[in-house]
Image 1 (cartoon, helix red, strand yellow):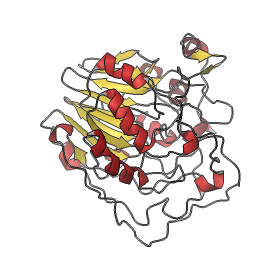
Image 2: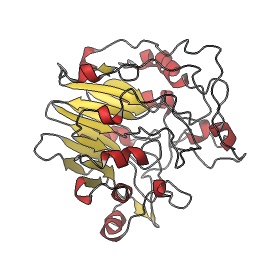
Image 3: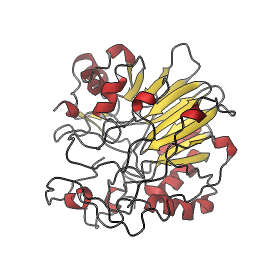
Length: 370
């Protein structure tokens, strides 16, 4: 299937093999798992639990959303504005430039159009209606971050891509010219031509793979977006790692921090943050306005769809966190310090969650789907 992507070969593979993170034919996390992050005694969720979400795993009604197009026509007064478009897709407007993270417009986080986690509702803005983007960032190759139909559409635009090592093979197979792809190892930097913007690949604690035989065949990374005036951190997917302190020491304070908070489970603690560990990661990064991502779009774990948001709202004051909780499509400027409002409460109360179509095998997952 084309959606699986392409394995790296030739010079691309040689460059991957030169990475200090490459060992025994795959990429590896740099540190052992921190004690207590993974509950080895807890039972792993069954595949049926993931693909047949019941109870409050899905909202019973559409989520409130905004059309940001009118706002996007006006430059942000502070020079920095972010619009959460669902899951880990965020349009960042930074000093006159537009950067798009992990763009996913497809209906499912899956290689199939007919099976797999289905998004709760469409992206607030059609991809064809998006304003011109100056740069696309992809943190790793999982389906909820690297989406085949979205990349095929973006390939027709003259926009550059920055990815971790090896992910460019997928993009090239889907029609993105090699000249528009830059692949980075951790701590390497890309500078956008004719612009005062740099992207730095930084550590994260995760894994990769799109099929049954390519686990960790490409690298994963967090990403730092930097201009002379502003600095933004995007976690991609990650567990809690001491490397976050090293990131703070290297780059200093961030104006905006985007951390994944959804799709967590006790047995996945080393590769996903969840809300409580996201706040610990924020502390390690030195604070900054916090925009949670990786929630409110797909049901990828066995918790209630709104549990990440509720937990954050409860725990954030104890960390002194400046929490940004915009609705889908609602542009926010971190410097304005908007108070988090629980817009998600009461949505579809008592309404049954829709069931996905297709048979689901009853098997135990070796790890999270994303």
